[in-house]
Image (cartoon, rainbow, N blue to C red; front, top):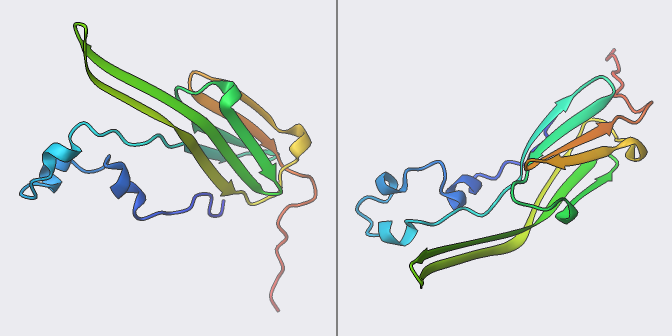
Length: 147
């Protein structure tokens, strides 16, 4: 299958996940600033191809199914969701920290063949969106021999 995700070289740096920030920022006097920061949510996608359809599994935890939107235009698939996360840390009756994240996460990718929009199905359970995208008949790639 051809390119299905767009590479962003700065994505991992902004998420702060792949680095142990204590080692990375050693000597920069910035460790207390970054301690406790959580990365904003992202949609992680697995795309598999079968003979007659594409199967997409997208991790979107903590979202209501009413807040998830899937759109298909030709071979372009877009998944978006409204994310609402709230976190409070209390000690007794005193509120020590309150964090909220409200926003929209979005993921878009292209497939090799066009999708039959009428036969597409989606279901959401346990934080995983499963989308079945049947291939449009007659749009298979054609190979031409070079003479």
